[in-house]
Image (cartoon, rainbow, N blue to C red; front, top):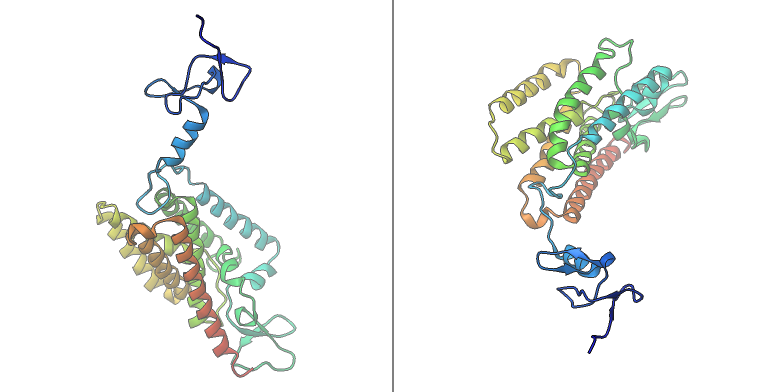
Length: 304
């Protein structure tokens, strides 16, 4: 007696005698997926993939992250484009540089702000609600007619190229971008707190944060620290020497913020290395920086 024809559970018009070794439903060649033993159906394969736990990196994120430093390339391009824009429109520096609080007259000249605004002058800076300066200033650099000129941009981009690729390869794109931006903002916050009357530009704060990250990553991975220690020592010496003519506050703020963020990524307990937990930690740090800015602004404008 001839056996009754069976049909694919997904394609009823197709007669088949092959069944899924996992769920026993009949499947046609279009629905067959090779398995260790026999074949699985499409639905069983999907269910199996959902139950597989993906490997994670030591700093969070999946182990299959791309190695091409796309974020580093994009950040370098943004810095160069911002420089082209400020060369074409020099007023962009005054409008978007890091600046805590100054008085500005009708001709655009800056004067110290001591808590009072006088007739003919306007308060300008972060204290006047221009919080965007905390980030935009990190993408601007000294104009060509300044003493350091275009070399300010060149040196920062060389440092970003060397450090950024190494750090991005370990942290992954999203964590690396968060580290860079938080370091940039952290540097700007310390400028606002210590030297609110100073106009500051440059990616140096973010790059000092990357240097701190590279040091902590190297220690966490158990690398030979001799070259890394020399790099960090040179960086700290530069921070001290350059204090005479650069914003050491921005450098130090970026260094401390980058170290804090990377330390949390590297040494936090495993249960805190999930993406939601790390996003939450980043938001908490951002809120703390915002509180510091608000407190400093309140003290600056108390007499206004």
